[in-house]
Image (cartoon, rainbow, N blue to C red; front, side, top):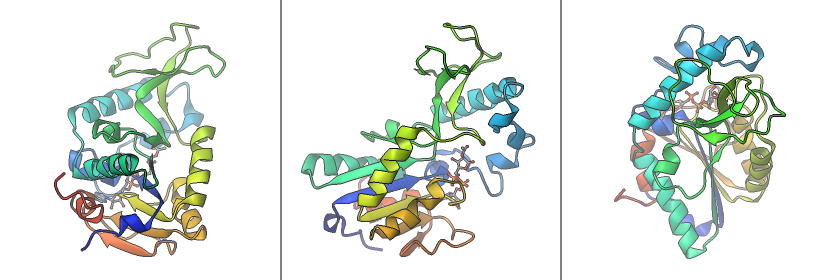
Length: 246
Ligand code: OAD
């Protein structure tokens, strides 16, 4: 395997999924041992079951917060952060990083900007949409559902649940970045959850070279990818992005 000729490209878009954090000890969602195999998870992670599921939702995310805090970024996160910083310094173009992960590991690896499509396990917000409480950074693990200091309504993790739409700003950013990129790299994602599942198709339609780095082939295959590197992201990315020392 040889590094990608990155200087041939001006605008690079990266999309990461749970596989990028696998080497950090955080489980993926699908597949054997994945989060979605846990009993009752489909009910808990569905916004249509709120507010009754809030105690379970907090139990789930308090646990996920703790696991992510105990974990550390791996060489895949580091290679991406390194690329972003190099591009920033050279002024060679843009590197826009989108993640479906909520674990904060890209930021801890030093990524200067991360667009968190599914929110963050470390942000808390009020369940009342018209409440004045600004979503805040929160590493606490809660035994009981916490109450909003502004209006007394229950608080919730600021993550996107099934049945909810992604933040408008993130979607706009994705639309622009994908239509103007000339290299698109997806890493560690099964490619089944929308809208991120469509990113490769949009980038390909815009004329970008499209690359998949994943442990296994997508199922069903996504014909939008020009090439695939099958294996561990933590081994492939340092070579592909030419950051062997990370
Ligand atoms: P998935 O669990 O669906 O897919 C993870 C992918 O990573 C799989 O294809 C694995 O083969 C691959 N993988 C595992 N270890 C890897 C490694 N070391 N290197 C490279 N690839 C590896 O996770 P996502 O695609 O991220 O959304 O899931 C997307 C969304 O589905 C999540 O953000 C979550 C979930 O429902 C919400 O909760 C809203």
